[in-house]
Image (cartoon, rainbow, N blue to C red; front, top):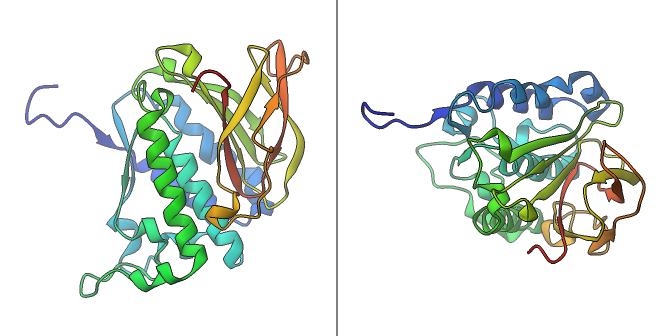
Length: 257
């Protein structure tokens, strides 16, 4: 890189498009699927950082939580989904302080963070979810190893705008470490939602933003799903999953942990 050693660049386009998407009522999101998929056209042209910085939570812009669409439950679910989507995208991550506790008010440099919010389960749930995402990001090679390499990301389905669902695979250099990501960005749970996989076996649910410990509704896949010989997404096998409402779920083939 040379020069002063600035090796990465903020992806402001991702920030703008992603926040614009999550601000929309889910009933309209089907018309804006490209806000989530456009980044695929340039994601590896530079070494990017995905920023949710102080710039987005000052000067009457509101907090990240306040930007989310819906009632209070939906706002928290959307925020957890946003963080999950961010952490499973190929790039490094930047979160401004207060994001980890779902600040309700925008940042004020004259005041401390609203730590008292951690007296409520909804805010504790977001804190736990971000802790889980950070642990996974650190421990799972597929979530960090090839952040700047096109080999690290593969779409399963970028086009299911009717259901506002996107699905993709994050790869490590060792393909046996791959992780499947499914984002359902409507408040309607998608039962028997089929996802193509390359191999038979048991696919364990390793993260679910709708888990009760994160103040979710508790819809999920009872630990995992066995693949069946039903071709899907151009792959010889598939898993039939529950994609929780306004949620994100991650699967990893059992035995690969």
